[in-house]
Image (cartoon, rainbow, N blue to C red; front, side, top):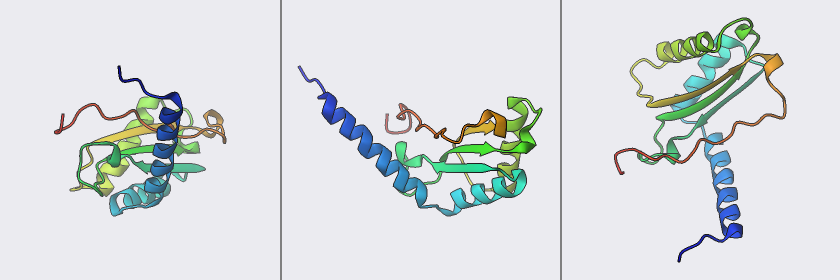
Length: 131
């Protein structure tokens, strides 16, 4: 029977977090464009744009899967759906012609955000062309 050693599993998870941290620090042109348009449009007090493409069955260096966290006063009194629509529209206009397959959005007001909050990694991809 093949069982996973809990210590090995923890170390594997830890290495994945370190890798994700390093990958997210290296911004490609699409990630940089997303960051710039969100910063300009929403004047956030906190902004994170993470390229999660490495977690999917795409070529190395791809920029197709992103997760964003935008904390802005401009979201006051807006529904979650309206916030997401505004973010999607801003990115769509800026990146016309670029292919983004997935965009995970967290859009919060400063009152909804805790400085100690961190953007959790997305679950492992279960689909794609290689499955």
